[in-house]
Image (cartoon, rainbow, N blue to C red; front, side, top):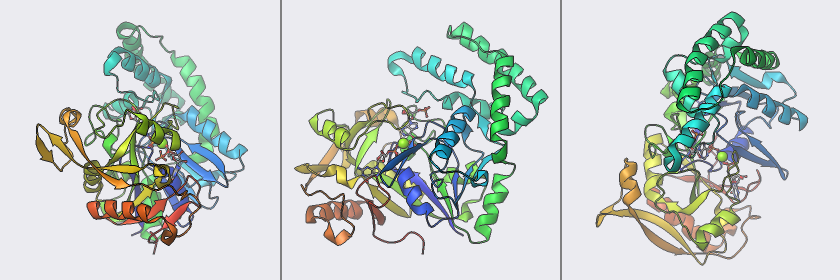
Length: 431
Ligand code: GDP
Ligand code: IMO
Ligand code: MG
């Protein structure tokens, strides 16, 4: 049993890509199981930055097989751009390194048009989506009318599915939203071109492939996208994404059983960020928040939007640990806290004068809570070049211990910079 799920513990952008890249050195396979090109996972190797949206973050290791599972919604054009970018940088030279499930739902231009039109119509209540068509694509999956990757290789079937889809989508776009419509002929032409280029990556049965790896004792990393608090059921609904982002989704999105998972590694930042709308109790709309944003380069990897910033929220983190059954944690971007005289950590909330220690499931309640902040002493030393835990400043160690004691789940990895090598190990994840 060697399946390890890597999952975001906050509102996304915790540094999942970096950690998957680091662990991929010791894994055999990396699998994406949900989300789509709304994700932006950044890897920094020898100072060179690579941002991935759909391709698993193990791809910079030429011997690792990277798999896009059936739970992912795939924008085929975006995927092809990513493949080209990687090839041009000297990666992905062997097409066998990447496999795309034929069962993945495809994101079509009308999904993106509907995403944009719906956001526009919501006006000041908009979700703040990435505009990548994620919500409309998952809607189609649930409504049993999705076009899947395998359909691209059966022209007649593809044409008839598109006719059916456009009958409804064009009507919605034109009559409800006053937006431009699409033609079957154009979409077929576009998709045929993509199908040809993606043919080397086709995989019929991802479930069987991954199952065999795990059964034979190989190490499989499941790479989550987004974060726990963006989960469609358990996140800050309706300000969430449209997939299940929690660790359980690695099973449903790949087609393996929960007994195949041995560990769940939760990734969290030393502070909190959020992109888009929705409640954020520890948000700092002041100079401290601006400092976190500036020092942490907190701008979206997918949309470039500034990320909202605030202190670490322990009730939210504990909620994530529970929902995912996290067994181990990675504490990211600790270096970004350098230079703050005092560092805030939210240990609870106040609601109508009462102290809450649990994260409220309802966004309506979460909007109204007041965070209870405890302050710890900060540090001034640059920690980005430190390679051993014992060399961290005392105040930094105190901060790590404080957080560790509060959450009760071991922090096994500490990250002090974006580079692969800027990773401190408390305990190796693979035995
Ligand atoms: P993901 O979506 O969870 O993979 O995270 P993103 O890539 O969207 O955002 C994380 C950002 O933080 C990226 O720009 C990373 O290069 C960067 N990063 C990751 N770990 C660290 C760290 O420990 N320190 C600093 N300063 N940056 C980091
Ligand atoms: P990674 O994998 C941060 C947010 C959007 C918006 C909400 C819904 O890089 O951590 P969507 O386009 O999914 O319908 O948008 O979810 N969101 C993310 N925020 N990181 C992500 O991915 C995100 N993917 C979606 O900003 O608030
Ligand atoms: Mg990201």
